[in-house]
Image 1 (cartoon, rainbow, N blue to C red):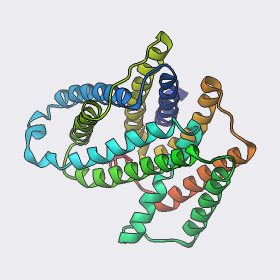
Image 2: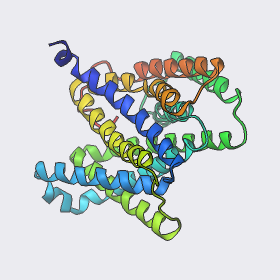
Image 3: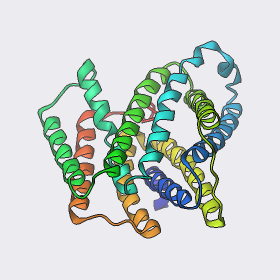
Length: 299
């Protein structure tokens, strides 16, 4: 069957769409009383329970109890930063722009690789970087000011958190099972989130049926996006998965328009197209042609 043949690409596409939809639904839940803290507690707790089941199913309890897996907790700190910053960002700017700024994290990873000598810098990569910066400039100079600038800053912080999380996880994955790394990282993030939410802030839950649906849907699609991403990487490898996953800003624009009534100017739409294309080309020049699915399961 055709679907079976291209199931890896389908999972990657579903991951991108689910990630975008989770943020749009989060934005809807905010309108009906929920806040960032309640959403983070719920989504991290649900995902943590699922990961625990997967870890037990894979019989990795002994490894989970070992001291050497405590270090992936560092990944959890960056995960917390990414989760909070991105959810704050969508409160201040359209979801599509927030997701676009977030998806510059491959550029941050590339810059790190060039700085430490892990990647060979090529002339065309500099051109792609300039094109991406130009596209971002088109977006940020078109009607964004005040609180919107703060939204862009939070999305940028989320991108940094994502890049740092992937770079750290790559190191730990060389020694530890991927589900163990994910579980310990998410456990750390969940503990931090609960501490922040109970000690300094209050948990605000949705107050209407629509709000509850959006709230639960956001947590569900957040988990599905991650699971689909791992499935895609296992089938078609991180390079092709990353290329398809970069369609998330497009999905965010579509869902944002349909469910939130968010509209973007022609200049912003052109800027989004330019940035997405530049990042895709940059990834193609950085990744190895013979990259396998096990090179970086979290990429």
